[in-house]
Image 1: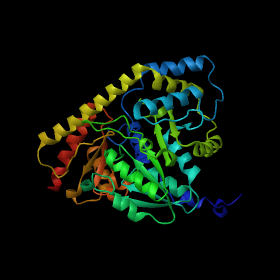
Image 2: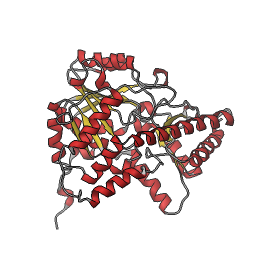
Image 3: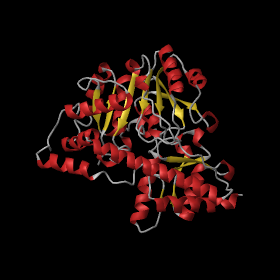
Length: 400
């Protein structure tokens, strides 16, 4: 028998940790499957069902024989629908023939984007806190990461001065995410203009994760980075249908970028996933083009807005507590301030799960600047949100 201890493994992969949010969600599923009652506020998965007409569109496509290989760029009709949404919703204009790639969720779009532009040793600037994959994917591809700090005082957006101070001759790329996971912050146009000017000054790419672009509250507006003056030639937009249409499990994403980048990203996609399932693409086409689906999205966003207000009402009605809440501007997470508890966020998350059976993500999973915070979703039922937040408020009383 071969001794596997003598066989080598990929050092970049072994140096990575698992995605905390995904592995934690897997753990919660196992606990629930074992019969434990857990209030799940840990995941970014809408509790709304995918609208039935989208499911029907996929069923019709399967019954019509759309179960074979398809165009590796994505069906042209899907790319046209994606380009149409970018133009109609954001004012960003892309050629569906050459500047759009359909991907297996936003994660694959992000992977293909980075793989297309990075060389080993290239430095990428990533905000802190941010979704764990933003940094880990860079490391996986042989790049280096510089985390740019943010704080509640900076509106959870790194200052432009902080971005610029981190730039070195090896820096090639800035990653931004707005609306932001995990903080719920939304970058305004003025901020993005300044960041775009910085990218142009230093000849940097901007990879813009815009997955939560539909989830906005109290008049906040999403500005796509690609719409800024002179930005399109250096901007790679990553997005998906997961949050907007409650289609997380369908794994439909897209990358919009200049033709030269899409041509490279296409090779990566061909050698990794080949193509998206065509019946899934037909469901996505329907979601993006049927006017009634836009209304379904508005209803879901209204539901999140109502839950957002529910949390703040519970918070104010409960009275003083050792944890602090600020309502998010976008996305569907509360980034809960637990600094007054005096314990690390990982310990707080573990104790909440074990002691009161509420599942939330420690802020440290999103970077050093996330320490002292917990991420809790409002993409859950009203009942779970109310029970979970009230249980956390009561639990925190022991730290007063």
